[in-house]
Length: 78
Image 1 (cartoon, one colour):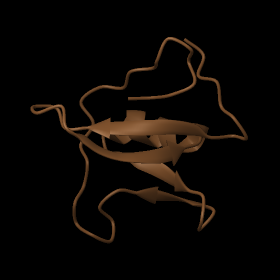
Image 2 (cartoon, rainbow, N blue to C red; image 1 turned 90 degrees about the vertical axis):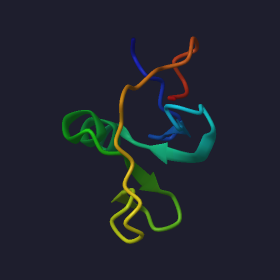
Image 3 (cartoon, rainbow, N blue to C red; image 1 turned 120 degrees about the vertical axis):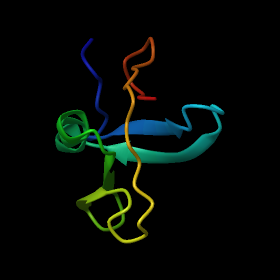
């Protein structure tokens, strides 16, 4: 699958593995997705700060990623 980025970003819906509760909606660029894949921890792109960030760096609430799914239109990530 080839992820379709719009303006360099793709929406990412974050879900809790066990309960499937939706935790957040964020955005990622290609670098954030690659960091997520290689480290196993969620990385996003902040549109307001115009920079990458690792979830939990400031809050301590890190998100360990179990798997990455792409929707059928290849324009959103779960």
